[in-house]
Image 1 (cartoon, rainbow, N blue to C red):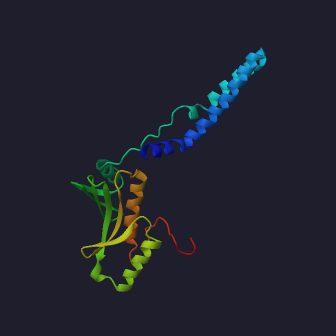
Image 2: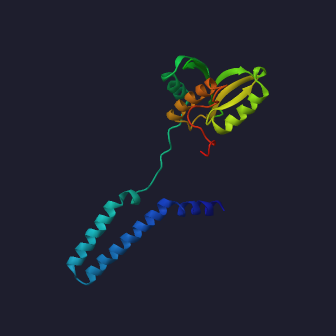
Image 3: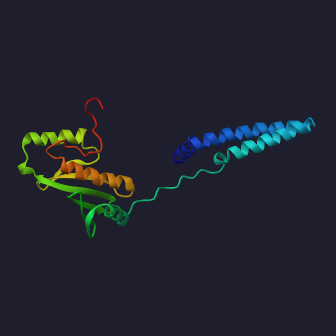
Length: 203
């Protein structure tokens, strides 16, 4: 069953179909070459050879093996370096990076063993929040919080961005910092991460 599945993956690969198409065209042109030889028609034979050459040259990228290189994996040190570039007062203590972004305190906590990271910013104690505001927080997580979310731990409300570590890109990290800071700053007003308003007014 494993071998059948592997064969199916190979033959269903788009690259295989593209390569098959090119090879079929090459076979047709090669047949024309042979036909030209049998008829002793030098003009047709040369024309067919030229056609074959042009076909091969124009489809080198299809004929040559296609190997997709794996994207570079984000490391903990790279994560810290990216955040330190555009935040203030960065301080690293083990797997925790503390910094300030637009006057908001941020904490980046990463776990290499489990390939996870999170960026958080404390906002307010939960016992200071009215029940209707708690409902608003849940609604904003659906509509306006986007990648960052409101979350609570040990009686404190945070804005938080949680993601696997290794697949992260520099652009995602920069966006995460902006969103976490904006979401914390906009508590009590728009409850928005500032990147996009999703799911309201028909958008």
